Length: 267
Image (cartoon, rainbow, N blue to C red; front, side):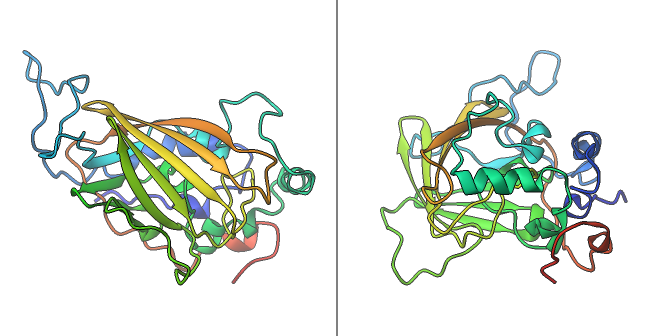
């Protein structure tokens, strides 16, 4: 049985981490063979991932399935596709990111301490994640961090008694064929990526999930955190369907690499 790698323990050790993740990412889930039902196939019998996206009984696109990140670059830098200077940092936040740039604070990154990556960072992590869709709620099960999210589609709002968390509180609605997810209620302890872009408890993340065809999904992300950034800013990520696989337990414990990382350890 192949052993999955724990990216939380290796990210940040070397500046070449992006290459390591790129090499290792395809390993996730390869050994688990769980047939994916309803796969459209071409005349040659091979999966046709460019076929139209499936739809649920209520007529909305069905986002169900096991998905994986379309590239490793967003793990290192969520703003990899933006021009230098396009991220509208508050002055103190830019100084903090510059301070973290040499990797000497990698030990302070939440995943290095077996803590959740948070939203939206967790979507770009190499381990796959599974969408389970119902008409009133969508659940996302992340192999990374053994984390999970509920996206409520029943019109509820974030209550004042909801405790702040790493992944926040998500509500959603359909805008045509696009699922629009608003997430608030964060604890301000997460980084947006490996470069150390900070967040605060005022973070508001809007994700627009659009399944472009059977095998691909686009996620447009808006980051709105007035305590850290001078204005909202956007990025876009692509994920792809992982066929004939599933998510498994990926417990993070006894991180022996932590002592090699810089910064103040949280445990």
